Length: 253
Image 1: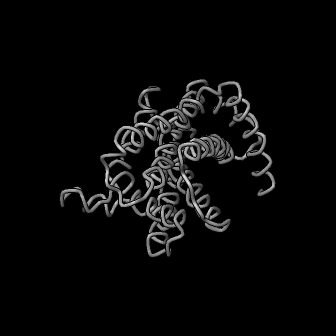
Image 2 (image 1 turned 90 degrees about the vertical axis):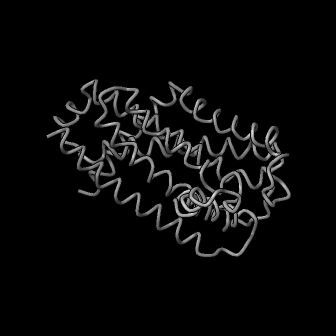
């Protein structure tokens, strides 16, 4: 059964990746917006923001990476919605393939596309002056956190992709996720915020994830933020995956 699942997922992943390659504008679109935010904040607002860091792009980058992920997952919901409307899921059900492999193929396609976008964003940040003395293990830890967060948000995207009534509805869910980093420590220290906003900012998942990545980049001692970040990522992933599978079974039953 396991071999059957992995084989089916690999075949369907190849199908989805071919679709991505024929429509590279989706990756370009999800990459341009975070880069535009980075340019805007660094070169327009950066001089007026006291982040406590020598280089604002160093302070800013972790939040931009989160925005890149949040903007990329909207296309996962959109692609799933199109597949549902085209009837391809019904055709898959008539074939001897693993049911969950259909969803995993979409999720892994999203992961590949978003990782490409993240690499491009980091490359642009390097051109803008981003520097980090972090070692290989720290970079691997950052990559692990980003991959976990991408998987968690992608499984959230699966739910509206399966249940939305329109393409706009499938995409719209990602808008609050894109703006969540703005109410966190991504752009300014939370200490500068009014008390009600600061309380929300300090206890929402993006802040702990951003702080953990920032500490890894700047070679600071990693405190409880990294464990809180991992707990958020794993918790969201488990809950979202469970609800997505339930929604999928209901739709194809």
